[in-house]
Image 1: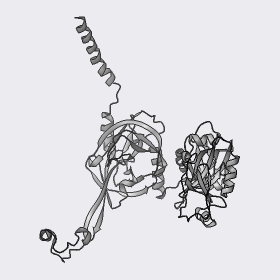
Image 2 (image 1 turned 90 degrees about the horizontal axis):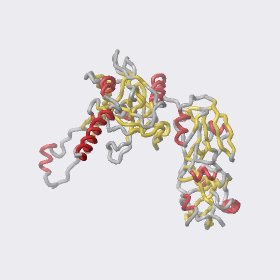
Image 3 (image 1 turned 60 degrees about the vertical axis):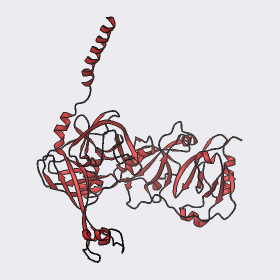
Image 4 (image 1 turned 135 degrees about the horizontal axis):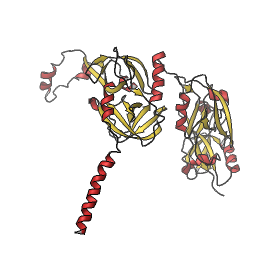
Length: 470
């Protein structure tokens, strides 16, 4: 009897606790009802002309079922002319001004052609492209209408990791579908988008959601859903949104001038690893390591050097290399800013005037290299050979540079050095020949890591190489 009473009491307590826990979960119903009318479906189509040979290739004589094909597609030799097909794309967007300005993604409308906007009340408009920016994946459209429902724009900077967020869009063409999740990370950098510090969420995003709004629980737009990470083409728990502040800045420039201007510093950077931090005498890995200073850039004019570690830009901390491009990109052109740099174990401040990012900026050179002229020397688990003057010129180098002919063992292999790498600096000093490189190795302190600057397929990169104990 006692056992039954305890079981009944435990069951009652569990039943009473469920509604109490449920009351802590957010209610998305009011958000979906109130803000769905300002979310639109966007489709674009472009006519593609297909030649007769593409549409229906000529069938060889004697092909089985040839008569059947001819019956449906016409006799051999009958010329029907080119075929015309519609190629389209589909996405989402949202109205942010009552007179018809709409924010969406660049990739939603990049195919061109006629762009059709459908509202939740089934009104349909043909939209004009005011401007589009591939680098931020933001586009601004305009429809000819007044007194439209709009969304409130919030702040992505106040978002917290773990906070609930909501998305409304048209996945696979299903209008006004609502999905929810949490903020997984902020300031996420993706390989193809250096100037966007993405908001990462686990909100279900699929093809057609692109360009739709990401809401906080106050009903404010904090981002524009842009892309997903997937091995299948469908949602796998990783979705990325453009911060609304960046999207609005881009949209304002597009509306005013039709183009977007970004700040440019002119350095090629890489991540500071734990091994590199140790080689530079840093207590922890932080900042952005300058692997190359571009010619005639603001950085070169200000006196930046290869091997500098950028710690702060205009007073803003740079915790990792991926954080620097968005900060620089949002800096107004012509601004004079101070950059905190670690150089030779000392922190210094460099003043620099930010210029506009050139459209045709070149990040490196690559070229096929001829065979080595002499027998390579073996050092630190790798064979080193000299470079000719023509090879240095092709790589954009001066008098420095030796090539790794082969990696034979550690510590080179453990550090990640590869055959074909061109070693430009060792411990911050230029290397002009295999003999000079050997001398630098002999002078290095055993048991510590040394930063080595190499050019790999035309791109400079620092590698921490640990000198073995004697």
